[in-house]
Image (tube, rainbow over all chains, first blue to last red; front, side):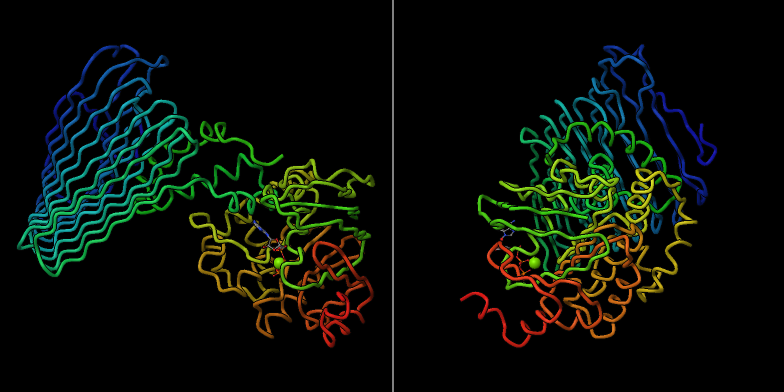
Length: 304
Length: 250
Ligand SMILES: Nc1ncnc2c1ncn2[C@@H]1O[C@H](COP(=O)(O)OP(=O)(O)OP(=O)(O)O)[C@@H](O)[C@H]1O
Ligand SMILES: [Mg+2]
């Protein structure tokens, strides 16, 4: 295992309290093998922090079996951020493609706390991720930068409840998706702004790239604003790989395959670049890079 | 270097090129002028292999290893590897890919094809230094995304930077002069002149005689409604500057 990280093997329930700044990211890994056929797992993580600490945490689900098998992971993560603590939290779901992954992530932020959360879904046939963030203290800030991808029959569903419960709280939801074959994605981003949460600022953006006519994606913002003097913004786009960008790269000698790879990386980079910790960013890139080549094969040739 | 015969091409079912004939020999510099919408950019993109443009008739033959081969069957990246370069009239922005990554990937792909050794990033930066200096571009342009937020003139300079990296045999410069200020025009023209040799050929698409004061063409052509209706030497450009296109059309 990696010595650039503090490693924890997750089996069942993990409770920990972050009491000092962590220099290395904490890497919590849950591994399934070929022996996990028809099993259901319920890993749970509880994290508390003391005020003012800063840490990067990676929660990761991987499958090491040579044979794909069907199993279910039902995960539950709860994190409480004490005042002014600053947590970068990356969740990588890279399960085997026959698995079902269902997750619940609950974050509670006290005054001045900052959570940068990166939910990344790569594997599993069906993946449902529920995220519920409560901005309980003034000036609390939660940013969710998500990426998911699907191919074949994969289904990915992300739903967020962002609860602004106190004044001057800030939230961002930025998601990117790449879907191909008959993959389907769904995104629901609900923002609730309580009556006393004046001066709050919430924005949301969802961008999907569809690589086939059968792939689809539905993004739905839900705004519930009960306070005055707040800023809310949302947007969603669905697009294809730009033929002009592809041609520009190819006209410089870059073969279609490599050009597509560059464009996929460029699309996801906006999310990955937001990860502050280098080691954590590298781990994410490693998980993502092996998926690009598979996708490239799916792209139909446009040039003669 | 390239022989274009009776070339017809469509985009979105509209016939834009209606029988273009043009031969460019090794070492020659040609200028193509003509009113807006006459098909100049279309011709350049067809030669570079843009998939939106369909060739409906005629031929394009390009010199590879002393043989004229049918260019139209080659993918755009292969054309680039064989030395064709298009400086776009409107270079696009590609967010998320740094200019350096792009240039290095492009350079190494072309090197690999031509049997030259690939470069690592450090060596490549060193290789780029004099080229950036020649174009009066700061090194910070390498760290930015491809054309991301570049001004119109900076985008054009970035095109010529790519040209200097790839050292093409046939360069098509589509209105590289448009959008450049007076000093930048000189810088870019100097750059093009330095890249010009007896072994390569250049096609300049331009609206202005001004560029031709700096870069001297051997031939000037007028493209009008998808056909070359007049060819001459550089005095033709001066004549067009004075008289416009009307006298040719009626
Ligand atoms: N993708 C496209 N779809 C539809 N029409 C197009 C497309 N590309 C070019 N055309 C049309 O083809 C014609 C020729 O365009 P082209 O860009 O080649 O002209 P040009 O000579 O380069 O003009 P300019 O001097 O303005 O750059 C124009 O009428 C243009 O509208
Ligand atoms: Mg043009």
